[in-house]
Length: 99
Image (cartoon, rainbow, N blue to C red; front, side, top):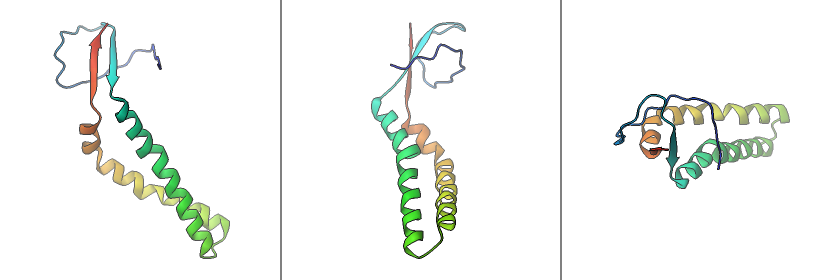
């Protein structure tokens, strides 16, 4: 279990518990939410970079051009993720539990 003891401000809609400023809480999420985040933020971009680089090298581009193209392919990908942030906010549900 990961622990972070620093103070954070978190806004969780629909909290049913009476919480006061300074209360110690646990913030939980479903494991599937974490796996989805890893997939969207790490696995898919890695595969995208590798595929673009291999494709560019197959079409006889230099290694520098292939590498730069692979990195530039991430700009529209993360732009699409930014545009879809409302979808991801609905998918990522957190629960606050008072300690």
